[in-house]
Image (cartoon, rainbow, N blue to C red; front, side, top):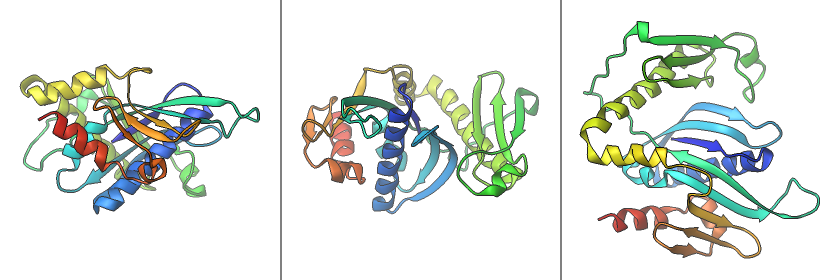
Length: 237
């Protein structure tokens, strides 16, 4: 799962971190396993982007309904004038590979860069070039990981994500549902939000796809998103 801040600097980066917290809490509520892949801290607050895995029964089936743009409306905590501000962040979800499925990746098609990690994690992250970025040249897909101290471990995690994305490209050609998933990624654009989270002048979360409103914003931001996930999935039947 990947979350990326939209345009708008600190405001959008703070919103991306709020979404990350929301999904982390949802994963915890479900009893799923969480693993961090990549974390890009914001310039002043929040995050620019984050990639992580959620492992559990039907995890992808649930979370794929979260793909799209998420919109936040609130009084800006970063603006002394107290004006209302709108922020955007995008969410995308990839399926993890089944153990029996093999994706062949030719070494000559890869460019592997190593660099020093940055951001949270203690002083050790800057002492060695342990962070890894892998670019698959034919497809242009690039993934990176800098969460572990070991360059070898970061490379393994990045390759895992890369293979998952390459697998997604192959299934796209054969599977209509996967085709829809990739089409939805192409449609992600600011202004085409799937859900709005309003904190001012009233409090409400609205899913625009199923026209569902929920008034308990705090519970939603604390991981209470099953009502939206189930509503979208049931609506597709």
